[in-house]
Image (tube, rainbow, N blue to C red):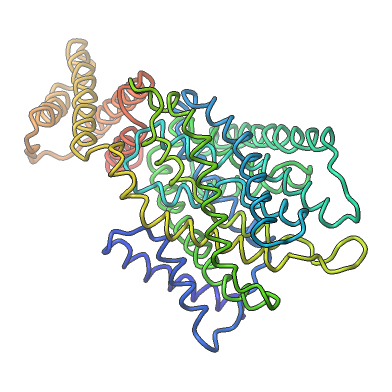
Amino acid sequence: MHAVGIVLVLVVLATTVATFARRLRIPAPSLLVLAGLAIALIPGVPALHVPPQAIALVVLPPLLYASAEELSLRDLRTVWRPVTILSFGLVFASAAAVGYAAVALTGMPPAMAFVLGAVLSSTDPVAVTALGRRLALPGRVQVLVQAESLFNDATSLVLFKVAVGVAVAVGGTVNLPEAGGELVLLGGGGSLIGAAVAGLVWLVRRRTTDPVLETVIALVTPYAAYVLAESAHTSGVTAVVIAGVLLGRSSHRLTDAHSRLQLNAVYAVVVFLLESVVFSIVGLELPTLVRALPAGRGWWPLQALALAAVLIAVRVLWTLPLTRAVKPTRGGLSWRVAGVVTWAGTRGVMPLAAALSIPLTADNGSTLAGRPLVLVLTTSVVVFTLVVQGLTLAAVVNRSGLALEPEHTAQEEDDARDALNHAALEHVDHLATLEVMPATAVDRVRRGLTARLDHTAETPDGTTADATYRQLRREVIAVQSTELHRLYDEHRISDTTRRRLQHDLDREEAALGSR
């Protein structure tokens, strides 16, 4: 009952904070962290202890899956090289830099400093997606940041396992060939299992027409991919990401409009609740961990700020040479692109879960020195990135000149709508020449499409929508959907525009009722 009460309190807190965040136009994750921190500082509030297994198994799979489904596979193909470099090279560089800095700043044992570096070496997909959702970034920049956070898990997880193995072993050493093999096993095995799960789910959903059953399958999919991959000792996160990317690409072909609308609504609620709980936990954990610090560690706030600065500096140096691939410019390298990509790469709940899973004792039974400080520094850096970078990210994007103007997005949507209506009108005119549909239904649909192209309101004619008219409208919507995906495949519209217009088409089709 105590755990249930905590969850209910977090849900109420999240709903209240989200309401204020929208009114104040600030990121809800940042405000949730601050709210959790403020509540934890109230005298008499019980300490919060969250098992890392609960975060990894219950919270992460659906959030990762939702983030992966939002990833544009088309844009990912254009930035796969910088994503690969960041997912491997930047992770190693960040771990090494943080490890050396931690030894110099805190005096902790080198092995535990390496553990800290591995924990903080990768960006967090949950935080990156939650903060980036409200920004109007160009497709390539958004996909680069999001894809990097989704695919760097295998590298950071191998580093973490190696670092923990060295820290808990007396006189332990790093076996590079073994670590390389583990990296291939985690990443490659997770990818194969994720692809297999996606293929199986694709076959099942193709034969399912019940919206409720569709929703249940979609909710179970990320957990199935995660559990199967972890049981096979591969990367569960990678498996969930691969399954989400593959199924997200073909979602419009797997389900009908009714199922997509219901599934989107259910997943929006699930993501909101889980994200709210996750970011509140980050704020609630810090005061508890600080109280467990041994005496003489009062410099931890400055040490955490220094480590955050190291991460930012290393990230800038690595992203700057890659800006040509992300946004080609005449001047070559772009500090503005590098700055936005750096500031958008935040840490989140995954580093916290990893830090909490560090063993309490070494192999010889002695207490693992430096563990409390690693937990505090990890959580402090996470809080810094979510609060400081989260609250200022929109300003950084606006000052960089990369943000897409609302007028540009609106014009793209209007042009795309006109293209869809033109394609639909051509189809209707073709049907009229063939005389396969009643003239009254054809004229009614033609008048509606013409009014849309003229940007005037459709005038109802007082007639009821008979079966023939509904059938023709479904045909028209199918033609518009095909045209929409053609525009997307030809890079004439963004992924955001495609999703918005597909949602509008789904609502139109759902309004026609069942077949």
